[in-house]
Image (cartoon, rainbow, N blue to C red; front, side, top):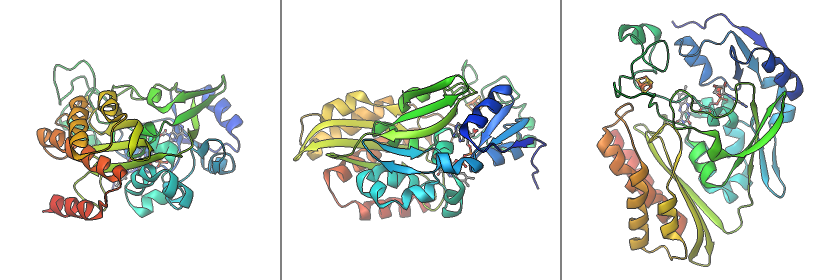
Length: 341
Ligand SMILES: Cc1cc2nc3c(=O)[nH]c(=O)nc-3n(C[C@H](O)[C@H](O)[C@H](O)COP(=O)(O)OP(=O)(O)OC[C@H]3O[C@@H](n4cnc5c(N)ncnc54)[C@H](O)[C@@H]3O)c2cc1C
Ligand code: SF4
């Protein structure tokens, strides 16, 4: 049995207390939300903070969903509560689909949206227990020096594996980061860096407190995810598409890929191809092919990397057909069945 290392547990009762306690030792403290990613990582000694700062006692400040000018979702909202909201399901269909496909119902009861956005990057050579990693002399991301995926790479290539980040980015989300120094609001796309170790641009003393989404009038969205088991598995490629329509004509669009690099990867060129167009099969095929150009999958997740790259085209195509209004339920079932064979 893998045991947790020793750590100090601190339970603030307000965001104000949380940020001032975090400022005392930001390098050795980590934020604990649902713990569904962080605690298994600690058991495997991938992350060994001396102190955990728990957000559980801040639910009164961090766990609400408000539909105002913007839709404001607290970072402490659980994924189960998020997908139980009929307004989220109706207005932000792609977000509902992405959150519904994270892990399992039990994990979603604990897992928070903030934790999902700050999820550690993943890699076959890293998501292993301590003894396994020691046997290969560790790797650059933790305790070692070499990247076993690309031995000449100067940076870690671990994969951004969050389901909600690409979709929220496609929906134009912004996040609020709070520290003892003050508060700032940044586009979600700016929260991420294409580096498997330093994958978040937020400072270590900042807490993500809320996610704001612009109103969804005129927008339709869809999220398509590749994973081996439909019941539980991280994405190994994903397509998040949001398009704004005037009748049948697209007037704005965003396409963001998940799990193909160390950050959610937008394809502005593919999105541009959709503007002022009706979503014919030809337009969809052209945009899907262009979107796949930015995908740079590496050999460090499930499935063969060349096939994963090919599947990006297929995922974007399916997501675009869904926002066009096609009934894609049979196609979703077909893919899930094929992957299990
Ligand atoms: C079996 C299994 C399957 C899984 N499948 C998926 C999947 O398919 N898709 C997927 O996306 N995830 C998956 N996960 C990972 C995880 O369950 C989810 O990503 C979950 O949403 C993480 O949220 P949490 O609240 O539990 O985060 P935690 O584990 O508490 O934290 C995760 C990270 O975020 C940081 N953090 C948390 N909250 C904040 C905050 N407010 N501000 C700043 N930093 C913060 C923590 O310090 C930590 O680094 C899976 C996990 C397991 C164990
Ligand atoms: S990509 Fe390389 S450095 Fe990063 S976790 Fe994998 S093996 Fe380690």
